[in-house]
Image 1 (cartoon, rainbow, N blue to C red):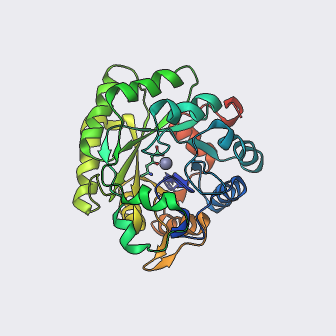
Image 2: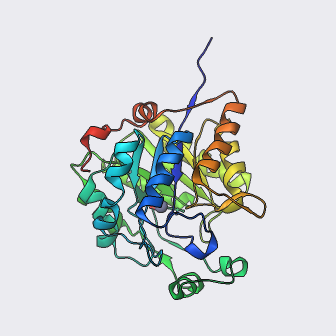
Amino acid sequence: MASPRKVIITCAVTGAIHTPSMSPYLPVTPEEIADAAVGAAEAGAAIVHLHARNPETGEPDQTPEAFARFLPVIKQRSGCVVNITTGGAPTMSIEERVRPAATFRPEVASLNLGSLNFGLFGMLDRFKDLKHEWERSYLANKDIIFRNTFGQIEYILTTCAGNDTRFEFECYDTAHLYNLKYFFDRGLVKAPLFIQTVFGLQGGIGSHPDDVLHMKRTADRLFGDQYRWSVLGAGRNQLNIAAMAAAMGGNVRVGLEDSLWAGPGRLAETNAEQVRAVRQIIEGLGLAVATPDEAREILSLKGADKVGF
Ligand code: KMH
Ligand code: ZN
């Protein structure tokens, strides 16, 4: 009997979009981030996507020192694949954003394939009492551009060149897939391309099934069998888009970075809860959850023994 297809679950445990006042369950301190990552891996996440935060204020912190407080702990407690963000926060310079990935040479780092508006202000309607002053100005800003110019993308690629780090290529619209094709055709990125298609973020492509199909068809046409498809549905779109993609041969991303919810009006209490929910869908489809080593095989990763932490 044919063995079931293996589906890679990525869990993004804290991110830089949601702010501490939105959910008491959002990991902020290094201990909370480490526990969340290990818990997500134990629930079935093969890859954990990591940001760091200031433990007092919860503000995004892209200093290598902040990441150093939890990277070794996660590596010691789990065999999962560590994916370090180069996205950081949209308010940061590209030099700041790339530093942790360049310093720690992870197996995977995120790479955002184009600029877009980041409309976080809609969340102010839902979350009124914000504890920290920085949260309101951060969320209310209607002029945030998450800048990822061709030059900045190239800067990240050249800065990380030689580290054998592979990338989670985050694509928020079809234009970003064409941008990736530009780099692929010039040999600046190599197959298999781990493409994370992002849906439902204000400023990027929507979250309708037509949007999912459009991104997949475009990626299929541009990259054929040279890519591995994954989906990230923001907010309430997380599980339905994951279910759609899993049924269509894709991999999935969950986590409190992308959605705070476990269902309508119910906050997820842990990242592991979201991993378990998507695992149930995957296994319900007769598919299986990839282990970290199976994910390494599927994505041609270098192995945890070759990282710099
Ligand atoms: N927050 C996600 C929508 C990154 O860290 O490089 C995109 C992201 C960016 O994860
Ligand atoms: Zn991220």
